[in-house]
Amino acid sequence: MRTGAPAGRTGYFHEAVYYGSDEELLAVVLPFVQGGVAAGEPTIVSLSEPNAALVREALGDDTPVVFNSGGDLYVRPAGAIRAYRDLFAEHTRAGAGQIRVVGELPPDTLGVTWDWWARYESAINDAYDDYPLWSMCTYDTRSTPAEVLADVARTHPNVAAPGDRHLTSPDYVEPDLFLRRDRPTPPDPLQLTAPTVELADPSPADARAALGRVSDGVLSADRLVDLRIAVTETVTNAMSHGGPPVLVRFWAGPDRVVVTVTDRGKGPVDPFAGLRAAAHAPIGGLGLWLTHQLCDHVAMSNTTDGFTVRMISGNPYHRV
Image (cartoon, rainbow, N blue to C red; front, side):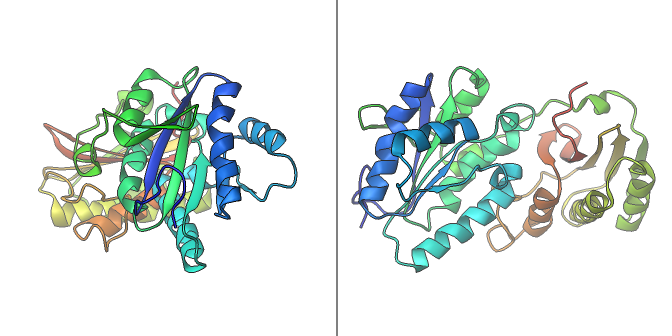
């Protein structure tokens, strides 16, 4: 049985919380958490340590709430979706009539990697709709960039506000439309220089060999293995589903390797490709899903040159 704002509904009830002070945050989060505890619902708090400490202090020590820092969950969007779906499925199998989660993305995600987290915030409206979930995603208006807040309004159907108010977002865009929009991302600074290596119509083996040369001394052995798989999958997808020529470019910096794969196709048909596994995205979906699991940032774009997948392994936040 659903309680609170989602009462009488099925599936996912997804809300944004905009706050400009500790008091505003607590005014929304505390009633949400306390209501879940009172109803006997699994209640999870995935906030930064400072915000989690505020909630802990206000609740007291004996409140049965699960606190999760969220840092391990919010490393990659595809990984977060997989982990959360497993968690929600476990609670649902145990008989939960509703699951409550209040969370926030780490500050780094709101910068140069926001494009794939915006896609995450949109995609989960579908990905989590299998479960009786009520979640609140908190955004600090003092530090969140305006363009991020605009995307938050487009990806959250509802807004939670102090006074137990639950409003409909007038700017909300359904995932199928939001995810189909081309989202140009700024080039990594390394891309403003000539590629270290450029290959035309390479075999996956040729691309892997070039990656090994470029990444020597830059990536750890584990990261190199992951990026090698991602490059293999992406080049194979481009050769199978795109159009020639397929151009693969590599850049290496002191803390990261950047790889782009461009073909003359239009990209995947399924807007959820990369965020959901192949059962949900049957055309090119498995390769892109693996790539999103294995890289530290993945961006996809359509330009006059064709469809491009950019993969970064290492530090994707480096801007100089």
